[in-house]
Length: 275
Ligand SMILES: [Zn+2]
Image (cartoon, rainbow, N blue to C red; front, top):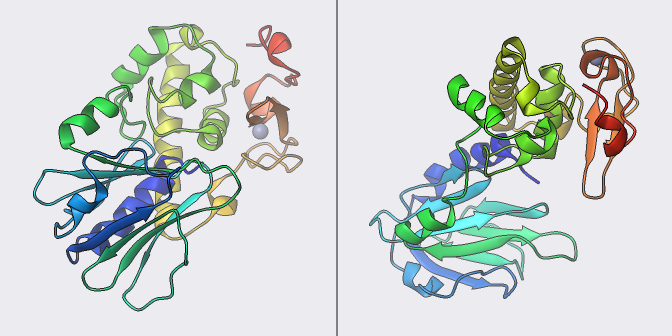
């Protein structure tokens, strides 16, 4: 699933493109993709977008008149592209929005499961819908991070991925950040010492801003990720072979030398003993 740096890079790229000319037609959208029916997509026709923004992993397109906001979440397999006027576009995308100059914003989704979503909200309903999201992970003040870590006793990897605690980080960047901070994925948040909190805060900022710069330069996963999806490769810091521990829904990659005092993580039960 695209995480903060990738979504932010897309928002910045789309910003001048979607605000260039008014909307001619919004839709059609696949029945599984369109999550709201009131206000209807047709009410976008004739309006102009103010640009594109990001909140967490959501792309937001507010109208210039301040009355509506189109929200798009790509989940794991969604792709959103702006096609210049006259360009060849997919025949049956999940969602299509056509501008009066002939440009098109097109959402496609690979795989069988259709999970990406399109919503049309008023600003007030959007705020309510996203109210559960925690503060943005990029630019997070150290004091806020300390509060997040100490208010509840949580393992670091799931805590970083919890959009209610802080928003924008998923599996891949949780792996990157904890490796960069030299912290075990299973350390309890309440047990971090002051220097470890400092390291974690610096790692969040450094990893996300580095990734954002690379994504904006058009770089892909192979350049952005230094530990995620690199099982068996040498750690870039200490050359120890990168390990992984599997869960039902995701995989944690880590360096035993940098992060777990040389110990290998077998599963959750065993990991409780590790610090
Ligand atoms: Zn290492």
